[in-house]
Image (cartoon, rainbow, N blue to C red):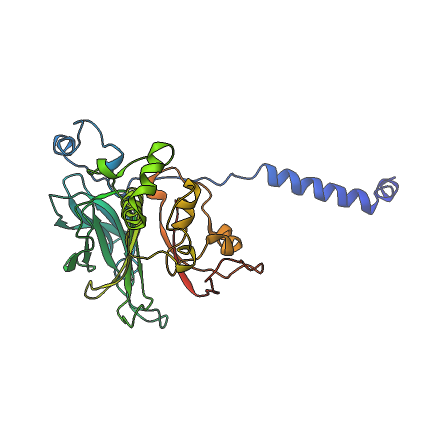
Length: 349
């Protein structure tokens, strides 16, 4: 009888039983869990923090401090937390592991700080390496770049020692939003010590009542009577209201290597032919469509779409990146435009 029972058990039934047991064991296994433990708690005096806000309660959009940075400044395998407190102090918190008698590792927190400028607010902060990567055994130490609302850029080493401080824009027009920094080891204009790239949108809160006419109607007629030179001057002022300025400075000395400000680039000659007298307001836009040395982004649309951000909800979502843009296969018929390949600087808006 026993031999008859085992005789009716086929190979397919044994395989089905094995698969069922495997699925049951997988479903009843212990679930992976994630646990958070508080390892660092930084508090600031609430009263002192509120005194720095316009409404004495909470920071407005233009009063928000840069987000904290978690990185390894000294390449020693220890994580550092870098933040700017409400009392305008740059802090670096480090975690050092020391062996105990029980064989475990104890955690000791250390704090380094330096006071920042009290007259201007910090709008951006970042870290990065100025030395290029050479080998695995190379020990590189990062620098900390801090940008203020008055276009002052300060660079600190890993010990919070001020290396240099540079005023990038002498105009009394502060940064309004979308400020960002990027520290890179690339070489620009034979600068062997790396560069720091800076970007920010200019604030338009300044007196421009005499040159802020809307285009269209009687305003357009007045513009046509003023002449081409006056139109160009007015356009530069209108452009500066929402212009995104970019700079490149030497990481070692802070020397200005490259900049893009309102009015830096002249109008492309191909667009300046036959447009001295304006007959339609669209020609006014067409006249200042491109600057000398600039090309239309449509020629690089495929490359640009690949690096576009998924979402943009806050000023801190704006960031600078190094990217290589290759022109699309379909050539443009715009005059004076040539092929451009290489490393380009992009900002996300």
